[in-house]
Image 1 (cartoon, rainbow, N blue to C red):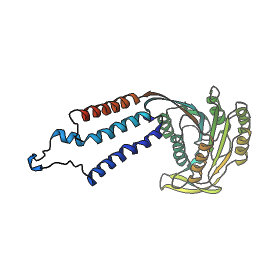
Image 2: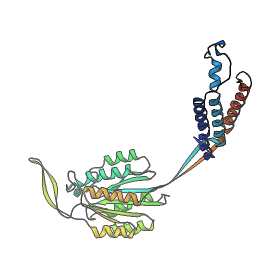
Image 3: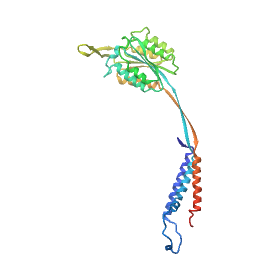
Image 4: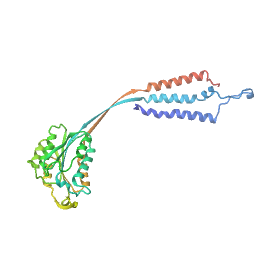
Length: 330
């Protein structure tokens, strides 16, 4: 990159421009004259390289002036180095894959499909973080450990589906499985984002006990209750009539999810449609913003000497030429 250490000198570039305009304008209004008794004795003037060069002498002077002014502004070439420091967040995403996630109150898809789409957008919006994925129903397991390889994580997310484990909702076990992945993390901020649509009914650890253990590890937990209140459409597959819908009661243990979030210094969110769910993940992404610090170092090399030398050379050359081969008569 090129910069000028004293750029205000560049304003003086108006002087050579004004000099040229004044010179040629003056020559046009009042051409030079010379007294002579008989012009017929003179040959008709011819255009030669010498006469053309003579007429260009003012432009040569203006160029020399411009080069000296540029030298005074101290042009410099810079070579930069950039260092990026990131203070990332380690995030474990915990996703419920129990049978109740088949409910289709998040039209036009079921809760699991919509949740996967929203989580995919969340992952794509992060930078500099390690993110992992735990899925659960009656059991919980790590679908993807903490990683910076978001493409790998997205592939693992794509493979999440119903039936990976027995049906049920083991929220406490899922929380501890995620926390176990964060125990050895040296990140300044460690976060669990739990999405569920049910009530804890499986596993040997209840959610409150799990939350207390997580709090001692300094792990913040955001809990999301997904699904509408009341009766919702639930698909049933009949071998004779194919897919049909029945109404089932949507049960979400909001009080427990709120307490889990409170114990771990997190927050509880309620999502009753796909847009609300997207907004929740966007809000969490803003709250858990990764700190990125960029430091730039530049080394500059002075370039004024070349401009100054060329300007002085042109001035000297003009003086020599106008005093010798391009000398004009008074």
